[in-house]
Length: 158
Ligand code: CTP
Ligand code: ZN
Image 1 (cartoon, rainbow, N blue to C red):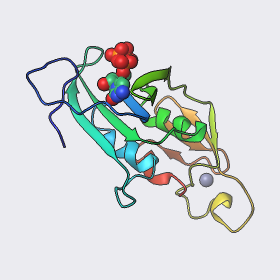
Image 2 (image 1 turned 60 degrees about the vertical axis):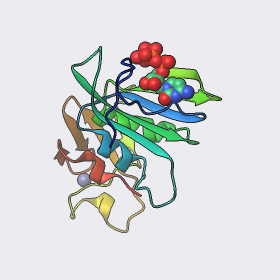
Image 3 (image 1 turned 135 degrees about the horizontal axis):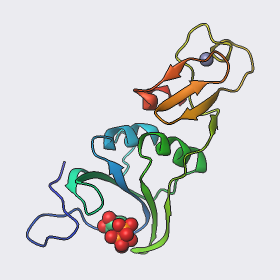
Image 4 (image 1 turned 180 degrees about the vertical axis):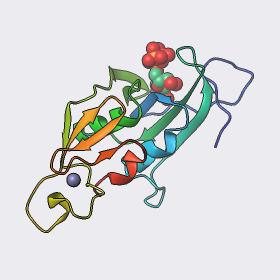
């Protein structure tokens, strides 16, 4: 990990990226879950920079994740919103931020999380697509009612 700051020339900073996505204003402590959601573990040569507990104007501390050569799908952004509700997604092309948007918490997420309840119809061999309602502090399976508040990233279907 790097010591990193956005606005102090006296400290080391993670360099700007040329093309890809900067996920900024991630809740401090959630950067590794962001990587889990994006399926990034470094094994495929992905070029990724992570800053953890970086001083921030908006919050006391934030995490930030920079991924080269990758733009995120709407499904990925939806799931990110569950663990990083204040995140900003910056699309970078040729060093410029060409798009910036806040994540939007969806009311439901379909087909991206798997229910942790082994008895749930969505975990059988039935062709049922998972469906979770998004709560203020977690998600609830629309089929069996199981509520998950911690560890949502571990439910991601890969
Ligand atoms: N960034 C980057 N590589 C680039 C361009 C931007 O890594 N080629 C990063 C910046 O370091 C910053 C984020 O992307 O963390 C957003 O960049 P920018 O919009 O220029 O910064 P701010 O105006 O500070 O963003 P905000 O208002 O969203 O805080
Ligand atoms: Zn269920």
